[in-house]
Image (tube, rainbow, N blue to C red; front, side):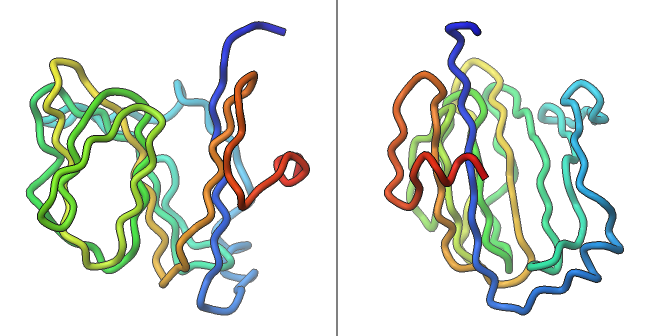
Length: 166
């Protein structure tokens, strides 16, 4: 046991479509990927790792990748998606352009972007930032999100400690 703090997130979604277990089974079994084993692709603005991109039982597809954005870079010009998107900040301090306004985000923050909302991420700092964009391709209800700090506090009314053991 160490005194190092660990943070993890639990997402719970409700799909507006029926479950399709056959689609999920065809996509493959559950898996665990070590960060060091993920293929890292250099980009003109930093680097990227594809984490997950496949069909699942409740959604047509889930896509999640990790992006490292160099200091002073913009992820891309403001754009929109048909799907909702969640961005989890792993490190750094950025400005999120969301629907004409700027919002600050830093390590541990979670940004929820509704379908059709113009957005972009700007790294205005002198250091690289890392973030995890996550999209589900079918309409989702707004997720309930738990933010849990091991050795720290837990503050999310949608969850309790017994829920985290599942």
